Amino acid sequence: MDPSSANSVNGFYSFLNRSMEDLERVYHSNNFMSVQFLQRVICLLRTSHSRLILLVQKLQLPVGDKWLDEYMDETSKFWDACHVIKSAVSAMDNFCSAGISIVSSLQKLNCSPPPETQVIRAISGCRREAVGLEQENRALMENRVQALPFWSDPTSSAGVMESSKVQNGFSGFRGVLNATRNMSSLLLMILMQGLVYCFPGDPTTPQQTAAGGGGGFTAAMGRMKQRVAAEVRLRKGIQLYEYRRSKAAMEELEEELERRSGEEMEREKVERVKGLIGGLRDGTESILFQIDDFLDEIVEGRKKLLDLASHHNI
Image (cartoon, rainbow, N blue to C red):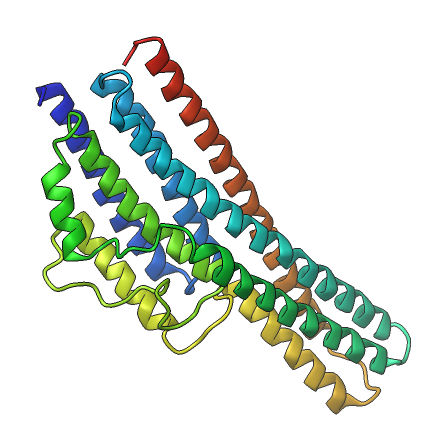
């Protein structure tokens, strides 16, 4: 391998190590499956893809060789998985709209006496939206996600052995692509569980990492996998923290209204629900923007590498 190529490849592995360590810190400093954590997960997907494109340009890989097909295959998987996530997140807007409507009704209720029964019915409707959303997302996971060829264990000892055998292929590109594949599989798995649906104990749920799974980057992936598995092992459904918190607040509101029987709701409680629903909507919109940007970057990256290859510049 050319020394300059080795430096570029080693730099990429160092980037992966730093990125996974940073993601661990973000995980510990935020609530489980919070918008902030999932945004950082998407950010890492995007930056690793961008760095991969830059690396290819430095390695001067042979024109028309298998490395391009392998890159295209991997980005096709990214594309399919991101569209599933985008579909699930977009569907969450109906729940947010129902919640905002309830807050508006409660604010009117505090200006003039009941009918609080109308608000209770609206809350029941919001809860039905949540049930429908989770049913649709469960169907997405069962019908589309498990069909993706993406859910092999990214931190298994077999994966590490395979990486060590092939890492020098195409000036080290194949090993880099394998490492990126493993990390991306883990990150997409986390996004699926946070934003689509989680089945504890299911093949798409991270399991215990194989013993002796390597150091650095591989060890960081293994730790992340185990921590996520520990959190989700007893609960199913959409794991997004802001969604679960908003749904619980709706249930508390319904109980509160039934207890009060005509009395005014406390303004602070209404404002709290308003803030939770607003935060959920803002967070999911931000995630959608990030996913759209990532999809655009995949298209641009594929075009760039095809163009470079066709002009014999690689």
